[in-house]
Structures are given as C-alpha cells and as structure tokens.
Image 1: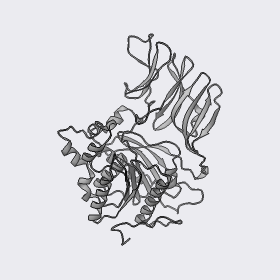
Image 2: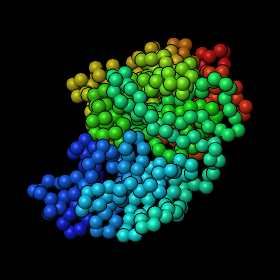
Image 3: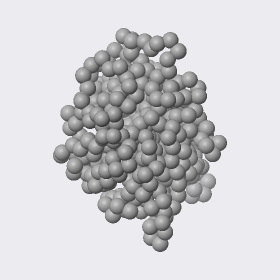
Image 4: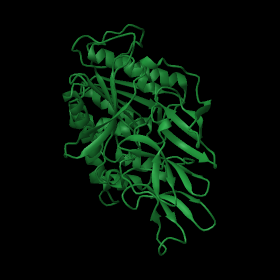
Amino acid sequence: MRFQPQWCNESSLIFIWNNSGWGNLYLLAPECSGTEPVPLIGIPAEFGHPQWVFGMTSYALVGDDSVIARYIKDGALHLGMVNIQTRKITLIDVLQNDVAGIEAIVADGTCACMIASFHHRPPAVCRLEIASGDFSILQTSSDVSVAEETISVGVPVTFSSTRDEKCYGIYYAPANAQYCAGEDELPPMIVSAHGGPTAMADRGLKLKIQYWTSRGFAYFDVDYTGSFGYGTAYRKALDGYWGIRDAEDVIAAARGLAAQGKADKNRLLISGSSAGGYTVLSVLVNSDVFAAGAAYYGISDMAKLQETTHKFEHGYIDTLMGSTPDTRAEIFAARSPICDADKITSPVIFFQGADDRVVPRDQSKAMAENLDKNGVPVVYVEFAGEGHGFRKAQNIEAALENEYAFYAKILGLAITHDLPDLKILNFGGA
C-alpha cells in the first residue's frame, strides 16, 4: 500500500508505504542510494489511514526540511515533527491531552491546520503555531456541549485472542456525574464490532457512545484481527478468515473484560453495523456469551452480498473469505449466518434501511423471520428512505432509543425516562 505521495522539491518524493509491515514515511530522492525509497522514519506505528474514503492526509510539509505527521501507535494518536535530513521524529506534546484523531492536515512554514477529533468536544478545524506550540480552534463541526464530568474517555486496551494473539480495542467506562452504581455492581457492557471490516474503531468524542456510557453501560469498541492501525500483518490476518477470527476476538474481548471486573458477565451485549453486523450474527451463531445483540443492516448471506456489492469491493469478499469462483458456494454457505440461523438462541434486534442496495432488507428480514420461527426473542425495525447507513437525525435517534428499550426489556433494567413501547416477539407475551 502506498498513500499520499507528495513532492517536497523538484526531484524528491515523500509518501507513506507499508513495505516494512507498518505504514511509515518514505523518501525517494537523488541523494538516496540507488533508486529505492528510504524510510524517513521507521517505527512500529501507522502513519496512513484506512483506504475507505478520499481526501484524507496524514502529514504535511513544513518548509524544506521537515514534515508534521499524525500516526497511530499502540492504539493511540500521536503527532510528531520529522526532520528530513536527520530522519528523527520529535513528539509534539501540546495535543496529547484532548486530541484523539486527525483526519487531514496541511501546513506552511509557520503553522499547521488540521481536522481533529477530541475526547471532550466535537471535531473541529484547528491551527497549530509550530514555533510557539500555540493551539487554537478555528471552526467546530457542532455546537453540541457536553459536561466534561459526564464524558467517558476511551482508553486503549489490549487483550489475548483465543489463538493467544494480541488484540486491541477502546474501552469506555460508564460516566455520569449525577448517578453512581450500587456497591459492587458491575455494569452491562456493549461490545461494538466496527464495519469495514478492515477499518478501525473511531477515536474521539462519539455522542452515540456517550449515550450509552451516560446511562450506565460500559462500551468496548473492538479493533479485532483485520483492523487497520496495528501493522500490515495484523490487517491481513483476517484474509481467508472473515466471520471466524473477528468473531473469536469479539467473544474473547467480552470474556476478558468481564473477568477483569470491567463488566457484568451476565449482561454482555453486542452491536455492529454492516460488516460489523455480520460479525454480530457470526458471534451469535457460534456463542451464547452475549445476552442480546443488535445488528444494523448486517450481512447474513454472503452469496447475495457478492451479487449486490458495489464495484469498489467486488473482489474484496473473496480475499476476506479465502474463496474463489469454484469454492464460493461451499465457503459462503459455511460462513453465512442465514444458513445457521437455528443456532442463534440470544435475542436480536435488527435495524434496516428500506432502500439499502449494499445489504438489501431481504437479508435482515429473513434472519428475523427465522429467529421468530425458532421461538427466539426478536425485533425487526425498518426505516423508510434510508440506505446503507442511516442519515436522518430522527431515525438515528429512534434506532438508539429502540436499541435501548430492547436491552432494557431483555436485561430487566430499571428505566427512569420514556422509551418506545417495543414489542419483542417470543418474549414474555410482549
């Protein structure tokens, strides 16, 4: 993978390359020996971005001899200044307390501007004066204000997979200054499986996560095997094992955090959208560790996905499943939750956009109908006018409230405010 090539003068090119197994900065210049690029900096860190959207930048030239760059190391964001001549990096400390992510960065000789996400405030366009270190916010993306004492800040966590390999995630503890848990009470925990699946868990203030943590839930955003940000080997380790290793890691994360006293082992929940929804269903097919699950427009039928997926991802499915045109039928059937729906015993709520062309509603509806037929508590919620990923504020809010109402009924939680009167099929006559 090569990312963000940029000329630093008439004959020298800088770019990010994962030749070493990590996406580091490289220089191709006349003074380099031979015609091979040389690393500007070689550390076990990821300077690039997942290649899912356009317009992202990870570094910017500062004058003729320096580069300011953001990178992910051990799951956390860092910002540093790289000297092109000495090939040394100096950490910029001014951002470390609150900045959690940087999506784009530009610079001149005196300052750098960036789109940054924060732990305690909405994302913003910011300016860093390079000489003085002065940092200022130029424009926020939202005027939403949340009391700092109510915000749960994500903490990078490592855990061991069932294969005894190192895995990662971001843990958010419950946080609300107006309430406290009972003595020795462990919180319910939502384990979130991100989409992609080779993307990564979001960093910074996410109001959806704060919705849960402010209501007494712990929340764990899993960077399961295949996630970006932890080196090429980790990302490629999902190739051929999608639906297996991601599911194993989610289960291991839930069990591990419960064993550490960070969550109630009897009140573990799982949620995910798109590829994350596929992981949710794969987990529920293979384990009863979760009390309930929420699948947002989740893939349940790989053969149908192969038919409907867009051109950008057309060959991606075979890579992740380890399939070929000759072996697709067998492998897709073995890893499609719709083929093993009778193995799911945990309650599930499905959320679906009526106009979804990537994962059409037939997949979620078929799963819900199978669970209903098998007597499993189930809810199917469909939103008109929504596609693959909800866009309308009222539907995003409704989905969250319905998910909360679902968990509350399944777990028997005491709720102090109004929630939708959700009808759960096969559940206590509700």
